[in-house]
Image 1 (cartoon, rainbow, N blue to C red):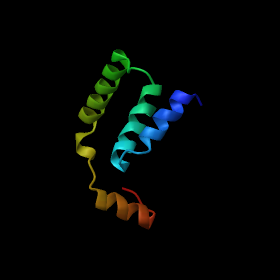
Image 2 (cartoon, one colour):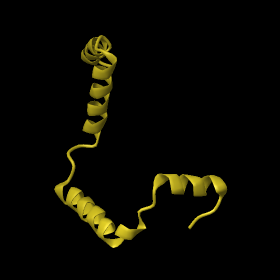
Image 3 (spheres, rainbow, N blue to C red):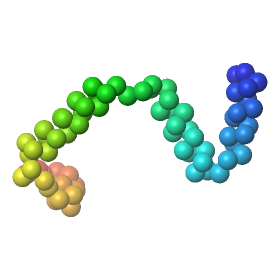
Image 4 (spheres, one colour):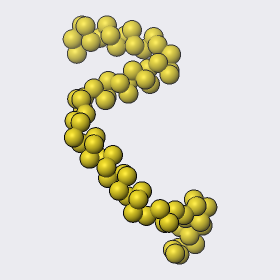
Length: 74
């Protein structure tokens, strides 16, 4: 680790826990680079398609949970 990185780390460790968490999330996200617009658009289209395709298949969490615990499914 470079001296510059050590200095940044030392300063970051002086931040509050929420500030460090936000900083860590931002640093991790920066490793992925900028999201590609066409990929984002494709995901949005897929989510919309799935929502249109199965609007009547919504099952309350309580039902799903009970089925998982009992080992049955509808």
